[in-house]
Each structure stands twice: as structure tokens, then as C-alpha cells.
Image (cartoon, rainbow, N blue to C red; front, top):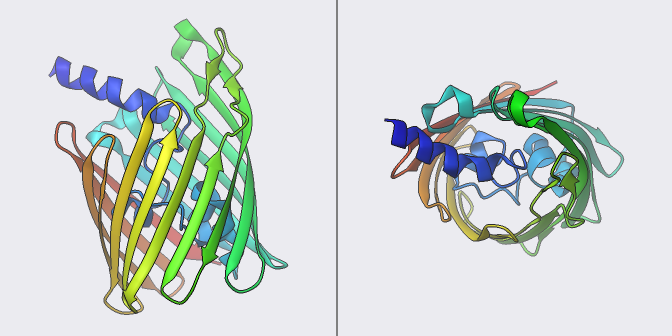
Length: 270
């Protein structure tokens, strides 16, 4: 059991270093499709790709929780509030991950706007604070993320985002770098109700990760999702249900050594 927790700790710390940016993204809908997040639209675009905020049409709030590997010390919580503005939307995004021994808090302000019917771009300004417990102290950092989304035609979409291109560091002793992260993806709809997604991402610290996802809509209210990701490898699946002003999404990711990471999110349109 001790070796299990040690392995979990060694694996999860690299995912925690920059809050959600190198772990699974915020939003159980993204989690269910293997962590493909660069196409996020609406409320969870505030965490994943600010270009997706261009699709905000009314005030909306979202809450998300992930229990990584069923360990309360690794619980990841996120929330967002977004409102429409001229030609787009803006949002506040916050998240927290960790426990008393390691705690990472994030807050960001994001804006996305459309440039015509098929193209949108956005930017988010970020503040991070990390704490390593009483023995190692804490530090903070300021950086940003920018992204675009392009609907090439009725079936094909393309998206790109970059996080921390300025290679900002936590101001602690010694200073700790926040890895830069590039993401690019392609989405394709062979039929109206089925979407296939692919995302490639590169961190200058952890190398390449590839994510694959599929989403099928049974109707306007019910969605089924599945996905696979590498580095570390894992499969995921989930579903979503919309009713009235609410949308509920649930998902889980499975790692062959560390087990399940259940996730859930709630969206409310004001």
C-alpha cells in the first residue's frame, strides 16, 4: 500500500505543478473524450481555450470536481462564471488542487471574441499560487494563455492554444519553472450526431501527449463519450444530460496502475 501511494505521488506532482494545464482539463465533458480540451466552448473554455468564449450567449456558471485516483489529497476543484459581451464573451476562472502538503490555486480572467461566423480567438491572464507545506514555503506566478478556434467547414474544425509561452516561474526559493504547453487539434463530424476528435500537445518538460475522443448525441439532451490519452496512457468514458437551464456531465478516467479518477460538472444558465 505504501508503494502504491508513493507511485501515485510521483505521478501526480508533475500534473499538479501548473494546476490544470498539464493534468486533465476542467469540465467532465472534456474528461469523457480523453481530455481533448482545445475545442471547449461555453463555460469551460475559460479554463481550456479562451477562444471558445466567443460562443457565450447568456450568463452561465459552472462547477467541476475530480477525485484523482479516489484520493482526497488529490481532489481537483474548478469553477467559472461567464457573460456575453459584444462579439464574444468574458469569464472568471478559478481552481484548486492538492492538500496541506501540496496546494495549487489558480485564478484567471479570460476574453474570447468571434471574427466572422467561423473563426474566434481569445486570451486569458493567469495568477498561480503554489504551497509546499510549512517546510518548503510557497510561491506565486503570473502568465497567460491564448488560443484560436476555426470551423473550416460544416464537418471539420481546427484549434490551437498555447499556455505560458513566456516561461514564467514561481517566485519561490529556489524559483520553479511552469512548463509551457502547446496544444493543437482536429475535430471531424462524419455524420450530424457523431464527432471524432484528436489533440496533440507538447510540454517542454514532459514531451508529447496524444488524445483521442468520440462523442455521440442520442438527441438534443443526452450525450455519450469515450476517449484515450497517452503519457500516461489511460481510457475514459462519460455522458451528459441537459434539461431546462442545467447541464450535468459525469466521466471517469482509468489508469492501469492507479485506478479510476471520477469526475463531474454542473452548468447552470442564468
